[in-house]
View (tube, rainbow, N blue to C red):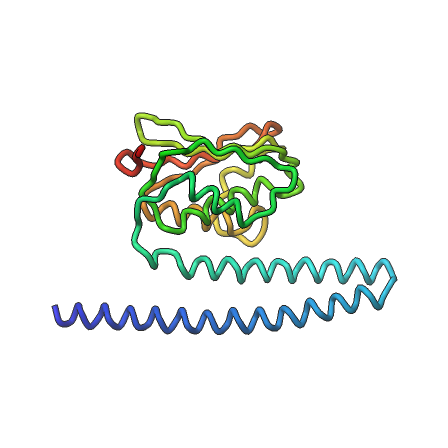
Length: 223
């Protein structure tokens, strides 16, 4: 038992040190990124050549990608740091939506009284799903969150009326990758997997995206 205690203490210490180091690296990258954004802004004001402005635009897009990677790494750091708990779904969805800009896109939530046993970062899952629907390319005007009770559990459904996701791209939606739908959906998959919740996309291309979060029996309750 003494060896086990010492090993656990060493692992906790190593984890703490790694989190500290990654935090320092994120801060340093963010500071350098701020300098880069500053130079890009000056470039836009200084030059009027279309080719140069197009080049600056490409650099700005790359910088935005780096910024998003920093945000994702910060979210990954916190996964699993708090024990799973009973989470009120309706309140969690509303809080996730409050941090985003919906513009003319409406949000309807029909999950009152539903609780799910999940990682406390469940709100991050809904944030990434909403971001997917709010992307300008989707053309969505409406997002609906509902739930259906099934023999195998409770399906929390997030769907929109946008362009949907091509069948060829569905298989790799939740795989970590540098392009495509990015790390957000991979992160959502990992958060849900902590308590055995699965996620899949079942929408019809051309009619909208539809994500189903299946909470296993015993992992949900109506209060």
